[in-house]
Amino acid sequence: MLWACILLPQLAMDGVLRQRADADSPLALLAGPPQRRVLQAVNGRARALGLRPGQTLTAAQALTRDFATAEYDLAMIECWQQFLAAWAYGFSSQVSLHYPRCLLMEVQSSLALFGPWAHFEARLRGELAALGFRQRITVAPNPAAARVLANAHDGLAVTDGRTLHQALGSLPVERLGLSREVATALVRMGLRSLSQVLALPRDSLARRFPVEVLAQLDTLLGSRPLALEFYRPPDVFDARIELNFEVESHQALLFPLRRLTADLAAYLAGRDSGVQRFVLHLEHRNGAGSQVQIGLLAAEREAAMLFELARGRLEQLQLPAPVLAVRLVARELPPFTPEHRQLFDERPQQSLPWEQLRERLRARLGDDAVQGLGARAEHRPEHAWTTQPAVLPLPPCGPRPGWLLSEPQPLREASVRILAGPERIESGWWDGGDVRRDYYLVETRSGQRGWAFRALGDEGPLLLHGWFA
Image (cartoon, rainbow, N blue to C red; front, side, top):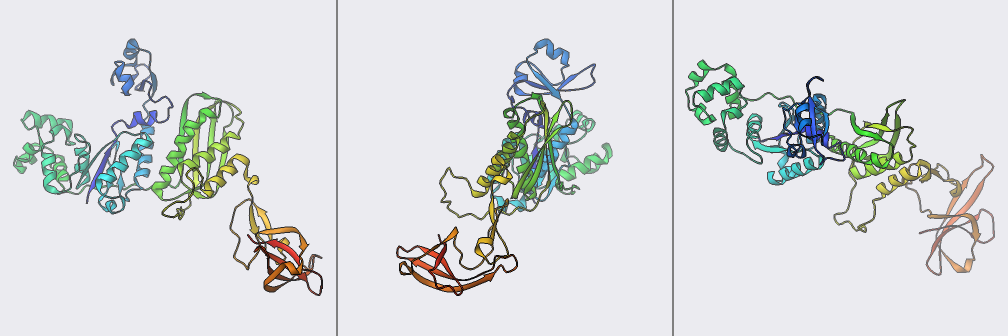
């Protein structure tokens, strides 16, 4: 087996920055009691101003006040880990959050689907970058070794036991996942790398150090399995973005909306499901929040379509008050069946697929503005169809014209040729609209085909009822 470790070194900072439109501005995350606020993490722009983790807020403000602050929220870090685990679940059925701020994935069984590891790794990095998370990725034959190697390497892929021993042997003892007391004791003994530790007699290590030390070394080398609890995605998607200021326009809500719908699409891809209905909750300072219901005619999970649909619905809402936060909740997550497409798409480059155009029209014009044709259990052609909001295909039946005339028109017998018929239709006795007709498939001299009838017992001309496409 091969295990990938995706280490997220700046998970807290990335989680905050991805919710801000001004992600390039200086930002510091604060922790600690109100009497002594401490900088827990800073981004690159804040570091360039001289800010460092561990500084007090007072000391940082003495250097500069040109930086924003946000809370270092442990609960949000856990939420981001859960979200990324749901994303990783789309690549592997064995995903674990055993270590903090990292993902463990079994990737050996996924290489047949996603290609060689180099291509697979590039895809993982690209999608994580698009989601707004920085990462370090390593691969090893066991999850504990992959995690430890991520402390010192990025992009290292170890696929066999011999190479693993060499890679682990050069690691400093401070990066082996041992306790600080044990690592300090080993360094004082002159043991600075794992290879030097492994050169000692095993019984000597067992006498000098706790049993956990040998257990950790055995786990790193793969002789002792690591017990993992695998992630299972939840049945509900619930994400919230708190805004930096009160928003009064729809335009300013597009950034958090785009982020939320992209996160929803990533979550759905991990579950291999779609969404048919979700709700946007807009939170205000005073009074009840506003809700925007978004419904689709079929399950979808494309981020662009979800964003456009939610945007169209949102723009129809008159904001009753400034918005402080946006929350997206999706509970109906039916299975998703991808659309069957041709290998070579012959549609013009700028054209939209029918499903996306249909949903965009419904979002912009309203549900009742886009109508489809539905069939009735009725033999009379003028009563056999109806309009309905859902655009559904008609059930299979005999040859029927695509264009039905509102009033039948007489045909000159000499100008048409009868191709098929008669097909007798007798119906409507229960509602006073009784008809008894013989229908014929006819063709004009120009080659156009029509549907014509003559009432039973009538000696008059054929009456044209519709044209075939």
